[in-house]
Length: 68
Image (tube, rainbow, N blue to C red):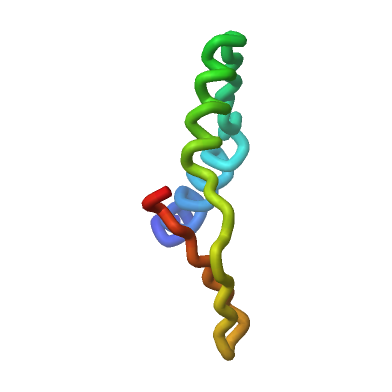
């Protein structure tokens, strides 16, 4: 009986955790001013690629002039 309980209890615990998970409820809305500010910051960060280097294994490296 004790061996049977040791097998069933972890299974029930895992089932409970899986079935009770409700997911991430992270919905966020920005004001127009916040959205414009975010777009402005992204334009400063996103710089065009100066040179692209492709490695033998398929890796791609983009060189960016971050002083501009």
